[in-house]
Image (tube, rainbow, N blue to C red; front, side, top):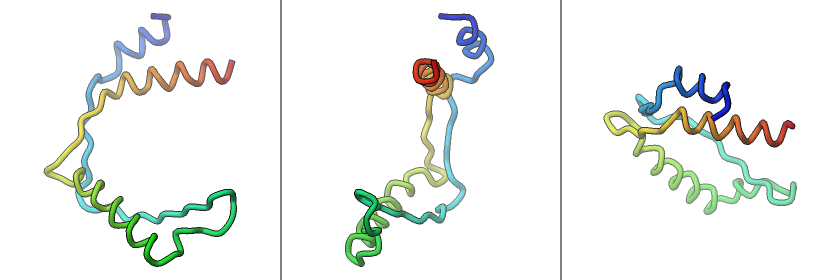
Length: 85
């Protein structure tokens, strides 16, 4: 493991627990091929909004989701090092 990654791994927490105190407000847009916003279609908009709200409800306290934050940051660093040169 190269030096910067080794140092970050040492200082970063390995697991982080994420949850929301209440349901977050969100707005969705979907523009396939840069055309109209298909989320303005009544049935589709309602269906997608309910699906996203259902997924988000599993992250509202007391429920939580634990992630390996250090690993995610390491993957991002490797990706940007490769992409950025």
